[in-house]
Every structure is written in structure tokens, then in C-alpha cells.
Length: 190
Image (cartoon, rainbow, N blue to C red; front, side, top):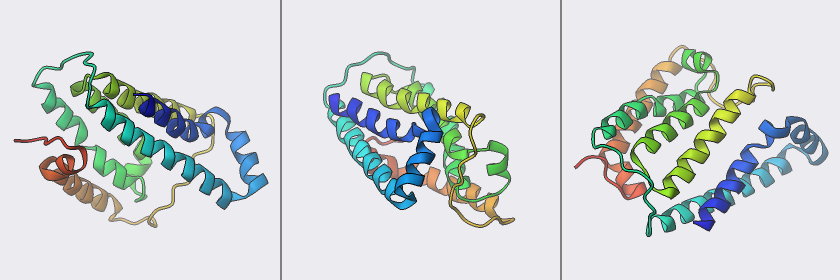
């Protein structure tokens, strides 16, 4: 559990710099340069992610159950997950979805975390999904007082929304049918 907590602190801490002190972040980029900043940021985030994955996997071996959800909640989770993958695609495909949601990736993380908290009730689940939910909400709120970050992606196009919806729904189906089982170790159907 300690590795999961350390990973969350490192990963979310790095991703919270702009939330807490965007001016400091900008000063560090000006002082050291954008590429060294991105390299350090990326390395720390990657170390945090590795610790999260390893720590979560380890915590799943001896779970501490906090709550149990009714079986029908799986259907609510599947429904909440439906827009997540199209929103992830829309984060990199400028179009109406991106404009309407302002930051589609944060909205995707919020929906993903809520959906998983509804059906996963161990301490590790609450730490992981609850931590990511709190971070995504704080980041979304902080966007009101700081400049919108530019996200590299495809050029604006009239088919970007169609691509985001189509690609997202295909990926959603792939996760339901086999990717979740392959990557997470838990089959969603069957």
C-alpha cells in the first residue's frame, strides 16, 4: 500500500504544480528551458505511474474491503464509461466536443474515477480512484483562474468529432470485450 501512496503523491504532485503555483512552473521553464522541464516532469510522472501500477497490483493481493456495491451498479459503471474514450480522443482532436467540454481529458478522468469508485470498494481502489478524482476536479476548477494549457494534437477539422466518437466507441468495445481483462486482469463480461 505504501508504494501506491508514494506513487500517487509523486504522480499527482507533479501533475498539480500548475494547480498550486502556475507562476512557479513558468519561472522554472524560463530558467531551465522547456525541454529539460518536460524531461524532469515526464521522468517523475513515469516513476510515480510505475509505483502506482506496482503498488496497486500489490495491494490487490491482500485487499481491505471498505464497501460492497450491488450487482446492478456494474451497469451504471458501464454507462458512465461510455463517454470516457471518446472524450480521451477529443482531447487531441479539436472540434465541438473539445470546445463544449473545455478540457475533455479531465472530464474523462472524472467519469472514469467515479465509475470505478461505484464498483470497487477496497482501500486501494478508494485511494487510487478517489485520488485521481480529487486531482481532476481540482485541476478543472483551477482552469478558471489560469490560462488554458495547449494540448498538442491534430489540426482542427470537420471530422474530428466523428473520429473521436468512432474511435472512442471502438476502444470502449475493445476494453469491454478483452483489453480490460488483458491489461487489468479482470474480465468485464462473462
